[in-house]
Amino acid sequence: MHLKKTYRIELNEVKIGTTDFEFADTPMGVIHGKINFENVKSPYELIKNHCKKHNVIININDKKIKFIDTQVIPELKVYLENGTELNGWGGAISGMEKDDFEIQFGGITSEIMQTEFKHHYEQYYGNE
Image 1 (tube, rainbow, N blue to C red):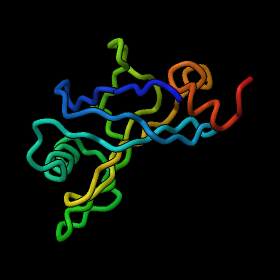
Image 2 (spheres, helix red, strand yellow; image 1 turned 180 degrees about the vertical axis):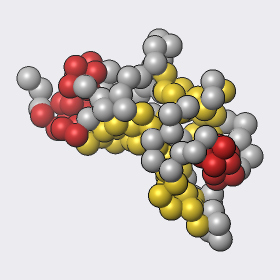
Image 3 (cartoon, helix red, strand yellow; image 1 turned 90 degrees about the vertical axis):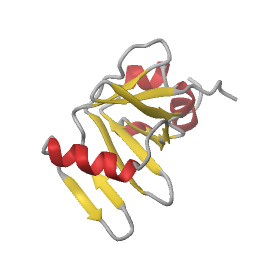
Image 4 (cartoon, one colour; image 1 turned 45 degrees about the horizontal axis):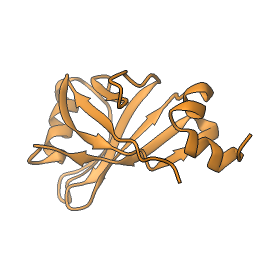
C-alpha cells in the first residue's frame, strides 16, 4: 500500500482545499480526485464566479442543481507536499453542490507519473 499524499489546491493564490488524486488515467497523463474544500461556503458559486470573471469556458452550468463542469482554469494551481507546483496542462473542476467536486489535472509527464504518482503508474503498468 502506498503512503497517501495530499495536494494543496489554490485559486488565484488562495488555498481553496486539497485533494489526494485518488484516480488516474495513467497512459493519458491525467490524475483526478475529490476536492476537500476549506473555508469555501459555496464551491459552485466560487467556481462559477471565477470562470465568468476570468473568461474560463464552462462546459455545463446547471443553476437549478448547482452543477458545473469547466475547462482548464489557468488560475487553478496544485502544489505537491514539498511545495513544488505540479506541472501539466492544468486543472478543470466538475461537480455538484450537494455532492462532491472533482479536480482533473492533465498533461502529467511519464516521469512525474512514475515518481510522484508511482502507485497509479504501478497499478497500471505493474512493477518494473
